[in-house]
Each structure stands twice: as C-alpha cells, then as structure tokens.
Image (tube, rainbow, N blue to C red; front, side, top):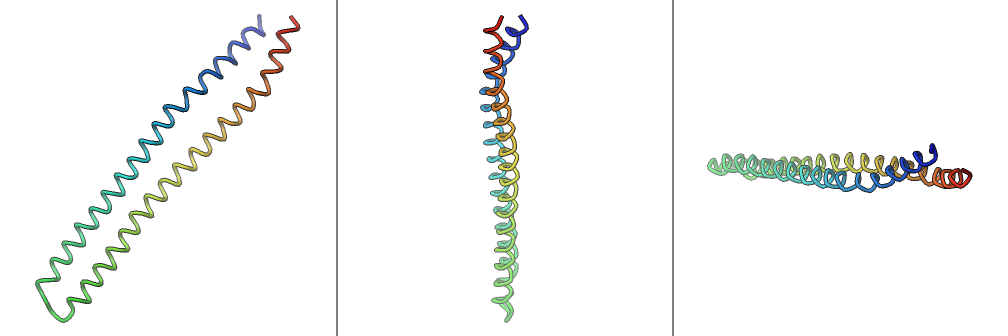
Length: 126
C-alpha cells in the first residue's frame, strides 16, 4: 500500500511538472513585454526631452547654436544608450532567474528519474 501511495505521488508530481512550465513561460513573456514597453517609453521620453532642448536652442541662432545642438544630440545618444542598457540588464536578470528555475526543474526531474526504478522494483517485491 505504501509503495502504491508513493507511486501515485510520483506520477502526480510528474504530471504537474509539465503544467508549471506554461504559466511560467507566460510570466516570462509578460515580463519581457513589460521591459520592452518600459524601454520604448524611455526612448520616447528622451526623444521629447531632446526635441524640447533643440527647439529652445534653434530660435537663438547665436554663434553657439551648432555647439549646443551637438551637445544636446550627444546627451540624447547617451540617454538612449542608458535606456537600452537598462532594458538589457533587466532582460539578463530575467534570463538568469529562468536559468535557475530550469536548473531546479532538471534537478527535480533527475530525482524523479532516480526514484522511479526504486519504486517500480519495490512494487514488484510485494
């Protein structure tokens, strides 16, 4: 009876293992979409900010105008690279978390694979 209960528990564990992946995958996809949206918002904000600065510089048409525009464009390029770097960092953290989860799943599956022959052998002895 004990072996039958352990076998049922093992089978239930194996069956539930496959269903964990689908919600987790959906969570990862949702998190990735959020990171992409945040990056896009950052890019749009930088674009608006730089356009506002350039708009403020152009009417002056002074001797420093070209230098001021180049400075704004350089700051814009830097800000855009920070948007991308932040998104890349968040995606790497997400990927690292997923690698850890997959490693845990692999270890769990290895434990199940190790126990299955023991359970089936024990069942045959009774």
